[in-house]
Amino acid sequence: GVTIQEAIAQSPRLQAHLRMADRYLVALRDGMAAAWLLNRTFVFPQFACLCDRSEWPDVMPTCRLENSDLEFPFRCPLNFLLNVHFMQGIENGLQGRRGLPYREHSFLTHPWLSRRLRESRTEVRFRSDAPSAAAPGLVELPRGA
Image (cartoon, rainbow, N blue to C red; front, side):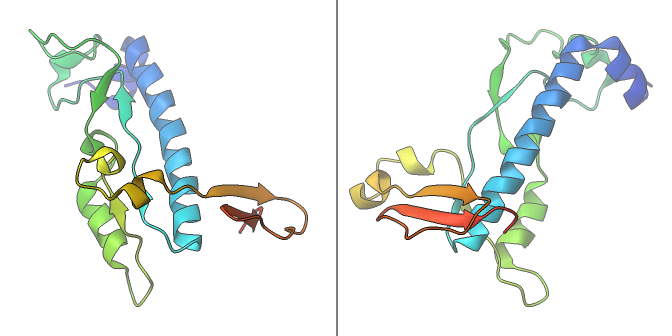
């Protein structure tokens, strides 16, 4: 077998994929926190990946399964980056805490979604000073909220 550190050392593509995944996770944390603070439903973005997911070591160093025709980057499913079962626990809430409802990335483009929801927008700003009187369609949160 190949250790994680050996795989990372052998594959510049895996290194880039992990850096990109780190940025996604930080953005998800911030977006989910804002959705929770505003009591809103979180809609996941579509992710791009630079490595195919595999338990087999032969995917290294190319990050591509043998005989795969994937072109990089490719749109990858949520479970390439997150434990979806864990996310279901977050949605339902834990130990009496309010959960965070979420939807898949295609939710806002689904043809059955009402026009009112599809076209609604709220701008969220984080401020270091005291929030001002918010205009319609604008929510201001204190930085670090």
